[in-house]
Length: 420
Image 1 (cartoon, rainbow, N blue to C red):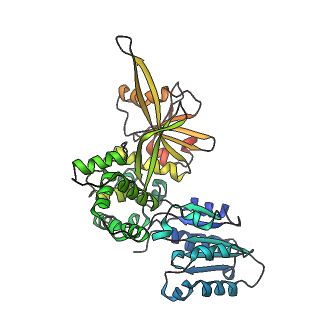
Image 2 (image 1 turned 30 degrees about the horizontal axis):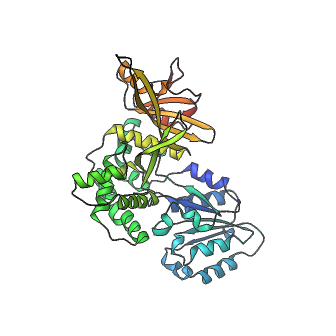
Image 3 (image 1 turned 45 degrees about the horizontal axis):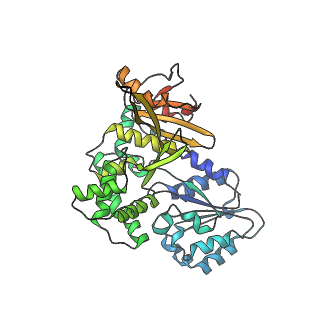
């Protein structure tokens, strides 16, 4: 059966908007997310469709056996010079560029070719790091590729929306998984990725030996999606549950390795009224929920937490920075004594002057549940939009306080849902 192809229109547009900007376009993202396909299939097709001749598309896939000689920087630079024979723009597409010796210096040298536009991707060890842009001394422009969104996933799914959602929150959005037909295929593939691909990259990059503690840490993070935690709390779990003496510093280091590989992302707590970040507690989300589920044997697939994780990823895909919102509620008890408590808003999504407050709720069964979800919104005094996303199928609603309630399916499938 032929592989399922996904258009990834957003990323094509991201690349098109950066054409000719004088920077190295660096496509980053976790392994198996489709970076090479984006560059060598989708973007190359775009160039051809817009009258760029093949002679002006210079491409090199350094992981191919027949290209191994060009991993030598002198030979590669000489080969590039041979390809450029006129004053027209040449598009240089490089895959697995970390296999090129001294690739940072080579890329900086390519920037001096005035009629060259450079695009690169890589998929292991050093090049996977989220700080890769610093390797190019401020001359890099990052395009981060996420797993398939639910909207992208449904473009090729043969069933209805509800079965599609069940598949998506269970197995995630890695393109290869989306194209598999059986549950056993998907489970086996996802189960092997951490040890055979992701852990291997982390070990190579940081010159480590695979440890049981790293394995256990990923499982702890997978089990605590949507819960406030920090390295100190995780250390307590290691001591009390796993009888391990791993230190807080080691836990911080390992979490950093997982973040650098784009496997997890963190959301910090933000005091909305005080306009400042507070405390050390935060939340960790997995960039692909299928990988998260595989780590714990598909045993803890609580839809509430997975829905929250997917909404977080959707907001990041749409270009928002995302925090956990905190507002203080002050009430007096029966004795007239002022009581303080902190109310949480699942997501504070901000992008420039735009800001949205968003709650994730699997269902609003009764008025008590509705008021529970809205309570923190009532304490927000600014003019930014407040949204509750629920799995219930319903039309978009707006109450007298301006709070919008929208179905999960409408939110994920409509790219303009934040504007409804």
